[in-house]
Length: 573
Ligand code: ADP
Ligand code: MG
Image 1 (tube, rainbow, N blue to C red):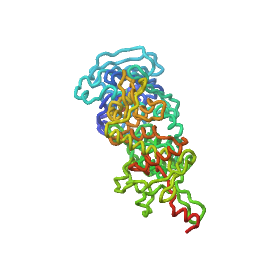
Image 2: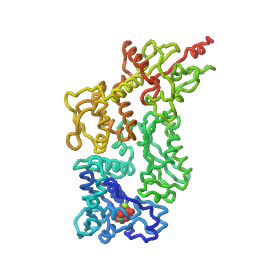
Image 3: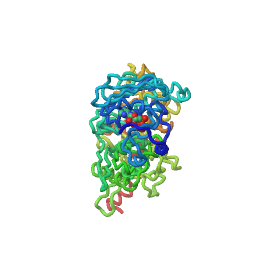
Image 4: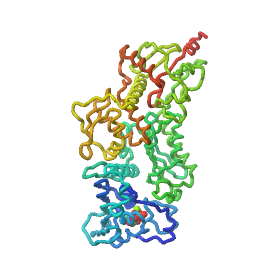
């Protein structure tokens, strides 16, 4: 379709809004234009967090020479022309607002050559005023250069974060878009260095591998299901063994557009019901492809939310697709297997001694919806352990012990995690972490998004014993780490923590993630053979813990076989 200015009636129907809040929104609009133009390779280059320079190049269909100036006019678009087109939008853009809004607040050069023609053209504008235009030799496709963003509106500039933080936001947007469009090759270059590149193989798993840790990606389960009306749900979900403390790793794409949707979120949570511990969330990258006439994209200024015409059908498609995959590929672990006898043997998580009479299932003892991190006491229940006598170790993983109430099986890793968690939390609160200085400072390469997170949470990290300082643009010099880490590469932990911190909503959650991670990395592992003395020491420490029954992730630290059920099983009663 040629570019045309929309009629005032159509223009008035558009849910218009601020498209240029910060450099990342400029990048999003420009990349979406490249995607709409059918590009297979998109390069984004930024300098100074996008404030000095944003340069987006694509190999898409290009803009005809005669349309170049028109593209910069308000409500000029080649993507819709009639009001009825708003009812079935297949492109990312449709409002004809992005280029003119960006041009109004920057210096812009738009260069393009239509595929199959042999001459390109450019226009150069500053604050919407045309400065120059003409023919130019250039590759097929389009490139847009933005300089001096917001130079003419100091008020907007004041609200920008540091260059590193703005580059981090750009990084996040480009990775989102890469996950939505696995068939497109994306490259992001920040200050002359490649910070992200997706292969464009068409397989989301390859795109996921650029965003998530390899172990996570390898474990992800493929989902694909189509309903009778042709709606298609496809993508990847994590098995129940992989989970996060919040919902930030749950991504939905509707007809390739990243969106936020309560409906789709509920469908997925329903699918995981009973498979995940309360307060834990999966990693999800799910697409839904459906007839564009079934989705209304024109409801939110930044198009982050959409409206579905048939919510029920979509909910059940997604819920069933994910549930079936989870159940088929990852059998449900049984915590309390029943023996064949009429009074089944019950291994249940250990009850608190004071609550022995209550027949409540253990999980109900943690207030619903609350993170299990050491907060059980808020339920008003004391939670100390009785003195236990260590009997031995099973599978180099479980400590077998006996107490007044029967026999206990203790998960050595979970138990040690609990002990370490409480210790590092207390030390951090008192600002007296035990630090292990590194003999040689370790240079850690960080992504722009990680640098942003580091800036934001450096005090928190320091309170747990991370010491060091920035070194150049993208390197951090690590000089000290929390004491007791088992890993040979402490710099790996720093990266992991920064990724967790980037998802933290508040300081409490940030502290929690850091403490839980350090605890995990400094605890004995399943499979470590322990001496009798080591086991006794661990059990003593657990007895002294404030919340001995769960590890920081909410898993039980122990199972209990009561004296009563032993007697019952052996027919003594
Ligand atoms: P919209 O995307 O809503 O149509 P924009 O202001 O973003 O509005 O772009 C205006 C028009 O310029 C588009 O409709 C399209 O025709 C053209 N255009 C912009 N960027 C590109 C590009 N990278 N490749 C081809 N055409 C483009
Ligand atoms: Mg656009």
